Amino acid sequence: MSDTYNIDAGEEAEIPETLTLPLDAWHRARGGRMVEFAGYWMPVQYEGIMGEHLWTRENAGLFDVSHMGQLVVSSEDEDQQDAVTALEALMPADLSILKVGRQRYSLLLNETGGIIDDLMITRWPGGFFLIVNGATKWDDIGYLREFLPDDITLTHRDEFALLALQGPRAAEALASFGIAPAQPQIVPVDQLSFMQAGPYVWNGVELHISRSGYTGEDGYEIAVPAESAEALAEMLCTHEAVKPIGLGARDSLRMEAGLPLYGHDLNEEIDPISAGLSFAISKRRRAEGGFPGADRILTGLSQGTETVRVGLKLSGRQAAREGAEVYSGEDKVGVLTSGGFAPSLGCPIAMADVPAALGAPGTELFIDVRGKKLSATVAAMPFVPHRYFRKGAAK
Image (spheres, rainbow, N blue to C red):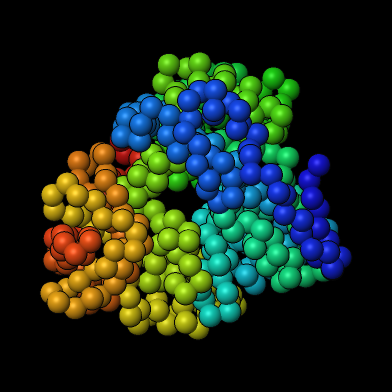
């Protein structure tokens, strides 16, 4: 059952003690090397991070992201305007123009404009579907319960798993298994466009599928009832293009795509503008404000910020990891927020927050790795071009 919270109920959210996800046994049976991540045991790799990364770039990788939170926010009014108003008071998206079946990337913000979490939000006929980060979902639920009005309902869909099928052959694979639109107006799954979503049915099982993901590749995220997750994963992996892929490759793929990871590249001290997420501030919200930290964020948009998130390409083959110090000459100017080897590029890459004056591509910096200074150059992101599917886009 879902945990449905009436915001004025005064109850504390119960955090489940189990650290296993619906596909735990399935991962272990397939040789997944399990690690603790965001409070759950999850597969970091199967055959090896390098091979899994390149397989996803060339074929289709199946990722278990069931640790992420699936939340529905709704109101009693038919057009959900009360839910729109309530959510717009907490995030900078323009939800009034978001059509049913459309998805946006957005942010939960604190009162100073710091990022509480980044999330995906989809308009449903009866509300809004949010996918939030696994490591922050309980805090997010608490935050939403505290600040949403009493007449807004928050539902935690904890009986659903979440799978991500990513890569250039993802559409081919998913379309081959008889997954049908649940409503006449919904397009076949391979005709969805990037950031479009809808209800689908497979063998009588309810699915919610969006054409999205966090690898920079074309692909899908599939919400499936937990009891049907193993059957769906097993079926998908019968396609010649599909293999299960671990968190290690998901991390290297998102770094190559220049996508930040909450708790590393994003936190409550960082605002959206310095993080390079100004696209998440909708046009109307830029004009009207009305979201937490609007003064700071809108000032950053018009005048710039003291620091910026940059991409770095390192010379040589030695990778630098999160926390390594960044130097300009002899001056420490920042620390890495993410770092590792980029299999698609054959070189190490990283992200860091540095003074805005040092943010131009081509700027030479150094990274201290155990007393050794590695040469690095500021590079435009994404490091590897995104390959999202957009209808009508030039090929």
